[in-house]
Image 1 (cartoon, rainbow, N blue to C red):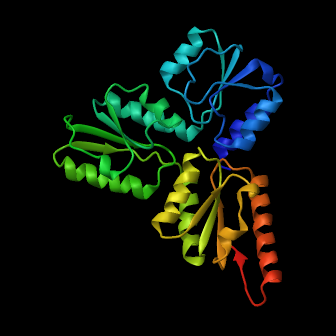
Image 2: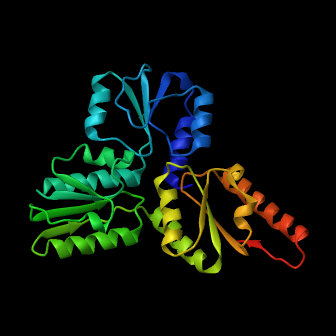
Image 3: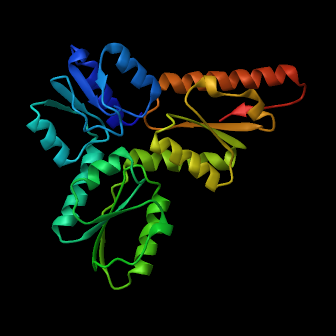
Length: 284
């Protein structure tokens, strides 16, 4: 797990009476964590309707952050805020506001509708959200500012920036790199892994953007990828033609879940060795 997720979980664990706290969305995009928080007594606002009224006196802002406007709304409703916003997400918010203060039209590279993206753009007056280079166009404002959702692959950012320059050759464009270092390191490690394996198992929540990005990265390098949330999602038949499988995980995946998947993969290897003589398989 990245430090932002670990910090958020530590804050939640330290709360004495969870029944008095509503989590503003999903603390992290991890189904096991979400289930355990519910069992502990935490209330939760739906991810897509976080503005719905909370019945508890305390509201916990997730690692994905919220806009300043949303903070003011919570304050006006007399809610006490427990803030677990990742510092690197907060940096992305500050960068976007800095570019806006310079009179720039802000271009946010990220997944449209994602909770982190919504939190950033809610405070902006002039902006566009760009999912990939194909969505870039010519912009009327000749002063442009570019920031990123923290989990966007660096290559996507580079492609978008190049297309912005191509489509807007006379624009004054300023770029602030807000992709977080844990994301860069995780994706770099995956790129080192891909040439050594026939396929990759990626462990993480279905709605975890950084996990889905890892799956996408595998596909871009023509490597089969299986996205699982737990060892229960593993199907031995999927590995029939796989000699070496790589294992990676999103930054909000519990260590215990990764270890369970690893053990299950080793068991698949063991079963294959015992079932078919001379056939080898391994986990990287």
